[in-house]
Amino acid sequence: MGTGDLSEQNEQIVREYFENRGWSVKKLPKQKPSGQVSDFEICRDNVCFLCEVKAISSVRANIPYAPVDNYFIDVREIRRAEVEKWIRENPDKRLILHKEEHEFLYSDEWDLRKRYRHRRRNTEAEFEEHFAEPVRRYFAQSSICHLPYVVSLHSDDLYTPKPEERDDFCKWLEGEIRSIDKGMPSWHFRVTDRQGPGLPAFYTAFLSIHKATYEGDIDSQIHVQVVGPGKQEGLQVHIPCYGGLNLDAIDRNVKEARNQLKDTASREQNPNIARVVVLAFATGINLFDWEELSPHIAELLEEYRDLSAMAVLDWVADGTPPPREEGPLAWLSFQAQAPRVPRFIVCHNSWLRDVEPLNTEACDEPSVHIPTNRWKRQT
Image (cartoon, rainbow, N blue to C red; front, side, top):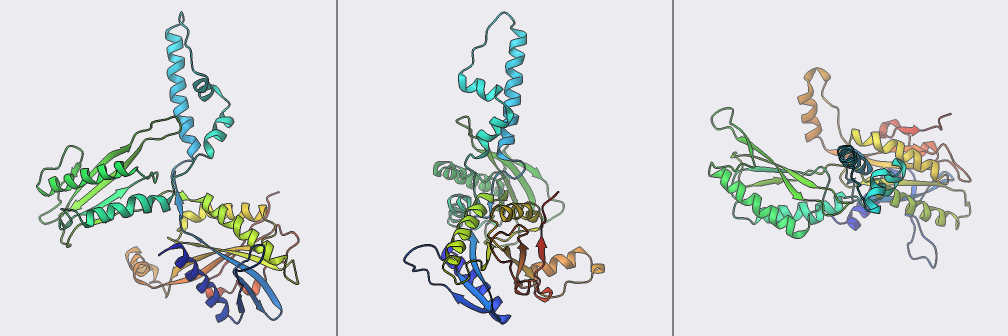
């Protein structure tokens, strides 16, 4: 689904939600002679607010386990230890370092972190478009597409290989799976033998797909897992996406939405009309994402004090989950099979300035699963 289709779908969800609750939803025209325009003006009983819906298509970005700058701090510590060891072992010699290397080794840690903190991050959208999808297409048309194996490719940093790196990887993996099917896996793979007759074997390997070529570059590898042969028909290729939330994409969308709402409000009879940003994540968010997302939303609300609230469009399983005594497998089965229905998680702004708050009747109805979180400044 393209970004335009996703945006239209999300806007329709928002429209139907409020219309079903008795609110009048007016789609604002985008063709204005000047200024920016938000998506909707939503009213009921003389209570109105503006709403802008933003689709976050690239939900994740590297690095999943630590900030980007931590990597370079570790590299510096190793390199500095090597240099200082050489100096101790060679007291009668003089070591000459290039200016850039000396700054890297001995500059203030805060300055070093600032230097690398804003380096370009790898994102889910680029990883999917330029690696995951081409790899799936390659193996769907490959000479081994009929083999009954499940292949999973895991990338911790969402590095998008260059086309030649990607093509070399696909050719290598195709040959490796062919060898596995012949019972001759190469030395690259660690093999977990079958646990019984007819059960598949597990083959795992870590392949370096990119070697760092300059100071700001990082080595990258892919964890390959091959399971089979199985009973399914044909080759299956899974490429899950890891990483932290793409906060840069969230920031860009919220900033743009805030400007659209501000410009629209300036042309209203009530320029202090309440304003709401709705964020819709293309691939959804999970419980662990909220640990990163909720404090970031709080920071954005404090920064943009003319936003009345931010809401996250989420999808939850519809229906009543099984009793706890039925165990975790029953709960997982319910989560996998139940249809998904939308809900909003709404975060009200505690730092409002020159703008009305969002009316609580708009979005805190317990029966439609819209909890309201309100952060307060720590004193």
